[in-house]
Image 1 (tube, one colour):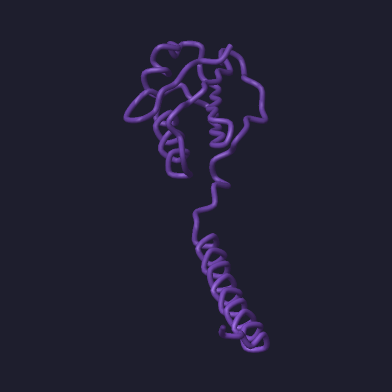
Image 2 (tube, rainbow, N blue to C red):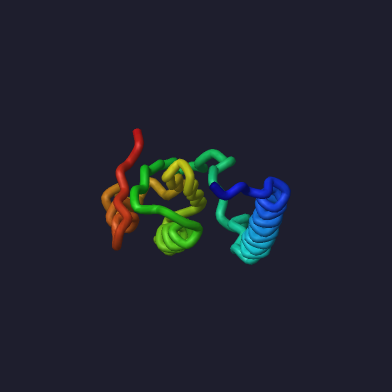
Length: 125
């Protein structure tokens, strides 16, 4: 029967652990560098902090199909193009879009604008 040298085994385990630690450190550094490259959504608010003015209403929608910052930008840009939209906020994590819009804009028009490609909107009451 063959006997194992425990010192050699312990040394190999330490060496493999150090190698894995090095890989983990490099992986985390690469992830941190990539995170710095992601666009900041500071220009797209997640909440509306003002009240509707005269002749305006606040509407909120549950948006399904959002998965990333690109979705947030796409929805914000699309709804902001509508005439009568004053303020818009998109919360990616809550899957919610809020908008202050002129009372003259039909709710159906907002729904149809927000329901395209993979996105589906339902008005919250």
